[in-house]
Length: 260
Ligand SMILES: C[S@@+](CC[C@H](N)C(=O)[O-])C[C@H]1O[C@@H](n2cnc3c(N)ncnc32)[C@H](O)[C@@H]1O
Image (cartoon, rainbow, N blue to C red; front, side, top):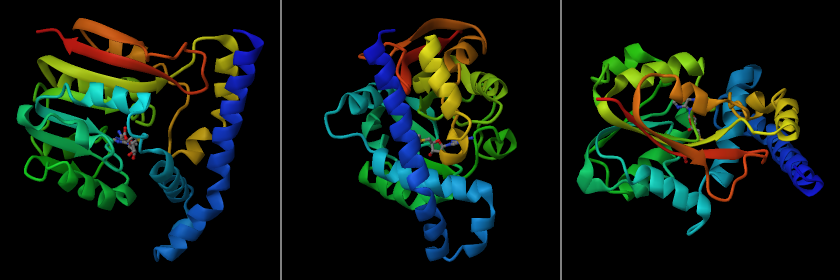
């Protein structure tokens, strides 16, 4: 890793942490304005609101951007019964190929996102097939109430969300079981960096990052958890195009096909 790359990685970390910290007072203010003053006493509610404010600004990829292309490539492959993990404001919903969809369950625990998500569902013409499940994907009992159990879904869409699920190894194992044999796990996730220096910067950032970003872990080895979850007929996860793996935020992209 050259000195310029190192400086860029460090700058990325500083900029993201700067944004995350600068929005904290706004988050407290937003909770008060929304008539939830007691929530300012809760670390998790402040954290959730902070990420909500940040994501509402940076979460919609620019039209035609590489980020948007990667999201489209991921989401547009979904078909049949789909589990859409953490759809947030619904920025990726426009990429679903509607004629190939039977049903989509969007599992979104952050209620602050739900109004924007509902608007995105309508804008994408998905009102008749999309159901929001207001919980975390680790809440298997709640998912069961919607008929989501072992072998019940054709595709799982994981766009920038596995960084935030609790007990990732266990949760990803449960997702593997929810997939039907031959089912697709569609992945566009930020992950642990490859090299020592980038990992060091991520390590430093991770001391406050989960609080600033509603539980997100900046350096999760998500590929290893996915590969280890069970037997896959196809394993095709690569560093996203244009990424070396040495960036502060670095992505893996591709799909896994569950063995039949
Ligand atoms: C970075 S945003 C990504 C939103 C969307 N997938 C996209 O690509 O635009 C991460 C989302 O995951 C959600 N999330 C966090 N923890 C989750 C969990 N345990 N189960 C499901 N979703 C979760 C967050 O609330 C947030 O909406």
